[in-house]
Length: 536
Image (tube, rainbow, N blue to C red; front, side):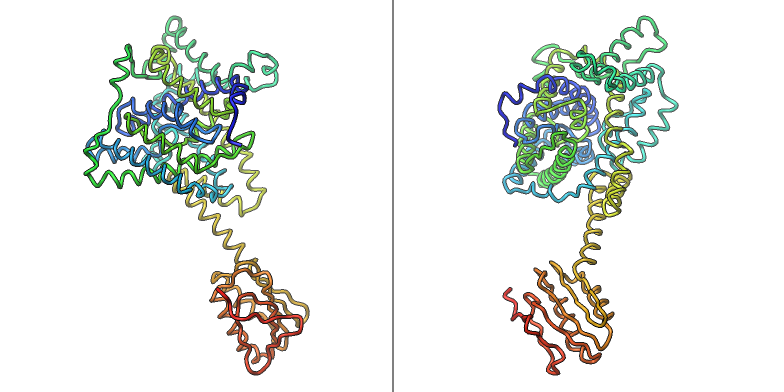
């Protein structure tokens, strides 16, 4: 059920408020980094985060999904702004993309999400976990060359990610390393049975304790250990707004004169399609991670994302999608309902208005520790063993998805993973659609379910394996559809069977008209029925 009463949300506030605070801490640098990578004003990333939390969370039917600016769209946004020569012009295409997504929702295009195989979704989660670990290790040691790729693995950043790892070895700072190591120990101890005995530990999520540790270390090290402190470049950086006027001046309105530019429409369609696919993928993944195994309505999600992008475009924000990293952080922090996503948006708003000075004391290294733990939970080695035990038809699509997401990007990896899954479906269909049983010189050829042209080669091989001077019963009682190529192959077999003295019996070959040859070598026993011409 997706419709909940107020009492349901109030009953989970003790879990959702701390979880929302953790998601806010994870989302804050990502919003800024994605805006920077997109060539857009920094505040546009925060606007997208605000809309994702304050608006999309309630419009969505998902209880745990978190929406905001997506790193996977940075290249599209950056290119679009360059082509149009104006961020205000790009906002027009974002408004149109939101309208297209709304239409897709009303046209029930969300059904596409049901066609993503489970093994592929699990592979996506593992790949994102590995990406998080690879992308956060440089931040963990004090090397902060752009947060924009922390949720993405685009062609433009795949090779650069490993280069960042190498570069970080020569650029680490002791202060960041200390914060990260202690932060990881806190997260590890926070989940231990020994600490969970204390009620205070149950009330405060581990990631929040890590942030408190990071701020305390920064302030104390400045005074007592200046050689081991972290520098300003190693801290969160929020745009300062001292008065309400400063806040309002950060909004940018779309320039609708760009409606005369045909490029606007192609950009809008591209944004709508890619954002919708990423949202549906994330939604499927969140449903897999949800401890309560709730299922979110995909069409409602497309409508919610369309509304979010429409509003974001009207007030100067970036494109919005459901994002798996922030959603995973939400689940990992103990979020139970959509209140946690709303709280994360509320904290973004309050931090911009009133708490920029406090937020700017948070070391990026403690956020890296939180995301490293999230990445590990997504990519646990047990996931590989579990899929391997389920068989190759599950393991190969899973491992293909992981590998190709790592070497290409999210959407390409998913497509390749689905392709691997389809191969196994075709192989299974190829083997099981037609079966041949033999007892001495008596054969039974069984046509199961749908028999298409893909099975023609198998049918020919089976027919050629029938010995001369034998009897064959062709049983089509289980077949709901028989392709023309299959009917033609069977008809040819009927004509050539007398040459090898093969007796053929037709047992209810559904929707097929097979003309027995005049020689009479094909007979229809009393218990069988030769069906007349197909009706369609």
